[in-house]
Image 1: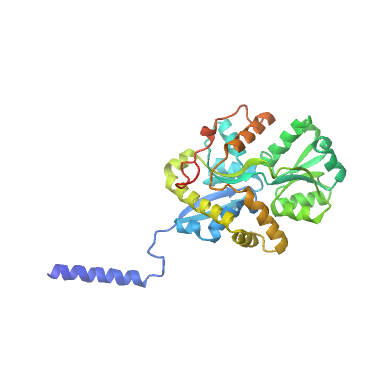
Image 2: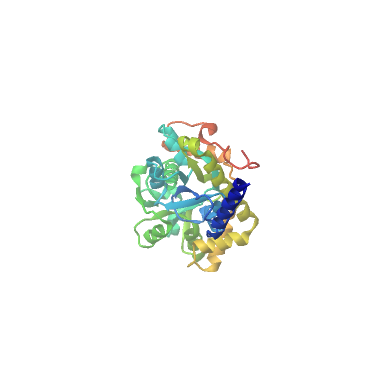
Length: 326
């Protein structure tokens, strides 16, 4: 009897101690996930929605986001192991696998291109890509999606890349400044900067890629990391897909998160950015086969990979939540 009473007193004391702790103190610490993105723009609305709405937190995750100057730099950080996932253009998975490195796409974020090749010169725009010979063209960084797209379009137009100057500009705002000050003649512009520029007038797209099915942003990871952290990947994608669904059902949420991302931008432009972003998102974390084929053909044509790689080698959608298109 004394033993039973002692145990009851012990349990009562433990319960009192737990009750005295601040809310959440008894819970396990969240798992840290380090992700890298190539640019801060509205293509990552699902990521920032999942952060702002607490979806990652609900999955027991703490997501640390590092923003790089272009996909090339983000890809290098991924290879170096300083980030767990690269939320980057699909072409990085292609190039890494072509080099025998460990990378696979596990979830889609943005399945349409978001860039336009823009100039201030109406004459240059009228000539199209064929008129860019001898010109300075702004890309985000060497090895980035913008770099490859420009090289591909030049080759299609019969222009050797040696006959132009590719200039690394980093962010969209830097691209715009470079165009305004004559540092470059044309530039690959994305996101809110692009929406703002085209709404002002005086800017002319040479090529508008935004209707091109192109897996611009996907979540990619190393298979070795996934082997040890498969559950973390599943929880991460569950939160991301939840955010994608909310954004596509509720334009007001898309506007609110976009405003959070760009607080200094006027409301009219913010709404335009959000409205342009929603149709580009993956509907459920899937990665479109046609888009993968298009980007693969582009990479082979541009000479950045020697041959095509099967979709099944590049993509593993088994980490998506049940019900998503696998």
